[in-house]
Amino acid sequence: MTANKKTMKKSGESIVLCISGMAGSGKSTLAKQLAEKYGLKYYSGGDALKILAEEEGYRTLKRGWWESREGLRFLERREKNSRFDKAVDEKLLELAKQGNVVLDSWTMPWLVKKGFKIWLEASPEKRAERIAKRDRINVKEALKALRIKERGTKAIYKKLYGFKLGEDFSPFHLILDTEYLDADEVFEVLCMVIDNLRHSESGQDF
Image 1: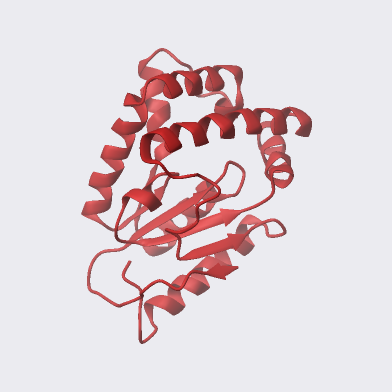
Image 2: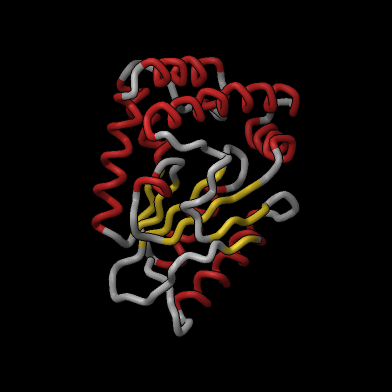
């Protein structure tokens, strides 16, 4: 676990938590758990993109849709046309301004100025194992789809915003290695960190 030495101060403003990490890192599970514990609203950039995909005729209800052939075809469309990602990010920025939210997003840590930003780290192999178990596919297939998806996703955000997803960790207050932790253990660690920061003398501007 790595804590980035950013300026931390207490304020009476509403809470914004940004949870990020590559597919299979556990970010969506954690974000939902934190939203429930702290009474915050949960919003997912991936879910918002799925809604836009459905409007384009894609069927996104399939388990593991993002790693499916159809999901990867939509990724190719996003690489060619940035309107999908821009629309989602504009909406998430509006929600961040309203506050009291947990944002499950790859882009918000770079685009939102306020908030507590967390990156969950795990190796591609470990993440592929988790995805294979979740989607009931073999690990080799999951790893192949994961690499294709991440290559395209990184290209999209490098082109749109200039940052290197999975390489640039400068926006994050906390980086947690989830390689050998299950979802409950990750949640426990993060709750401890957040509670300690909120009640410390220096505090954290969430």
